[in-house]
Amino acid sequence: MIEQSLLATLSGVRLHIFHPDSQSVRAFCASLAQLGCHAQHSWPPAASFPAETQLLLVAIDAHQQQALPGLFSSAQQRDIPLVALADCHNARLFPLLLQLQPSAIAEREINPFALIVQIIGTLKTVRQRELLQVRRARGERLAQAKGVLMQTFGLDESGAYRLMRSEAMNTRSSLEFTAQRVINTLQK
Image (cartoon, rainbow, N blue to C red; front, side):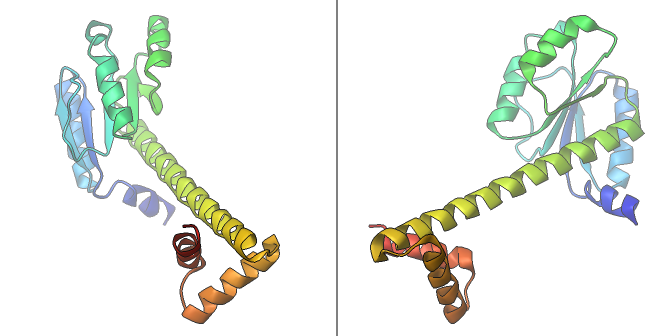
């Protein structure tokens, strides 16, 4: 049961792999397709990649070092997680990896099981971060609405919260929707 839910993380995910080893990468892409993932492969690394890409895997190659900062920057601007595939025995790559700041690092040699585990972990981490950002925004919106009610009606924090909760229940709307309505209506 757990394996199914973990592998379901890959369903529909669109990833792009920049890696020179085409035979093992093609086999890996075929494995990913069996899991419902859409994978594309190309080499050498380029600053552009398909617009629908949700995850990048990039082989770190000292000979392609000039193209990597542009690719990584483009991925970061689009908020796309990037897994660097690096030769872990090459200590000269560490400063480059520190500069590039990938979301994760895995062994450069294609090991399908290890890479699938890394991809799932990276996607889950990204989704948890996005969920935390949404929750933080909701909390900030609720705090802002309470502040508006406190200032407008001279309520304390618990009174402002009770008023919003009561209004949400009376209008059968969420507390978040009510908080946004308070902000839109009273903060002018």
